[in-house]
Length: 141
Length: 148
Image (cartoon, rainbow over all chains, first blue to last red; front, side, top):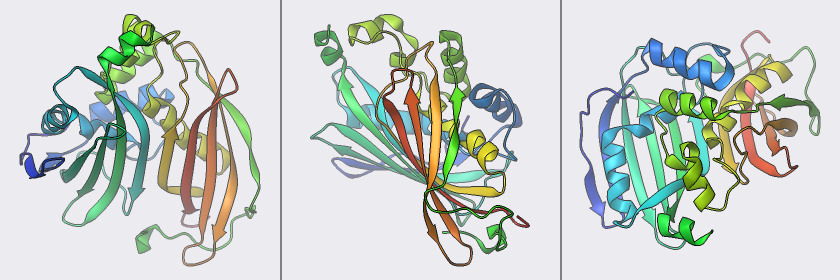
């Protein structure tokens, strides 16, 4: 899980929010649990390639998503994800994560672009979430 | 971008060719318990993956497996296909769901080779669900591991 927040969401425009820098790190026990669930145990050297997805659950990022997602109940549906490494991330090392979150209206989406590094970028990652109102789920019956 | 320390050496034991296909690999199935445990390990507690009643309300036969749980399977698959390749970039679109208790099949091919230092191998990776639908369409940028 992400470490204590070192930053807070800053509204740059009505539909875009900057979050961070947040302090994040990969705890060895969390890495082991994650590796177990994705592939039945450690199959990768060091940090699993997709482990940083866990850092998107940071409370500051969730709070920003809830604000930009709108007041009506909704669920996120993952549309796409990318991880672009410049250098491998290491287990147990503190990194900073900066996120820009953008709300698109039509179709309703949240686009999150994050950079994780140690003074220099190690990873750039992008997440696109479709916003599905819970009421739309009910009408799908 | 690739750091100099990550650059591979030229010449793999079995040189890759554009169009070369990788043998399909079966993955899953994933049970409801798998989804709960992945949710705990990843922090992704989106109820659409964990609440069968919510999935039913959406007209789905069951909760869809987390896209990231599926995407993560490309990494060990690549290590089986080509242990001499180092993964640098991976992107995926989540197109069709894989539902709980359903498995999938991974496949891939070499889409492009970009000569340079290091030479880059662009791979097109796919996961089909048990109904034959394309669930994930992914692209991987790889280079040769040092010494490969």
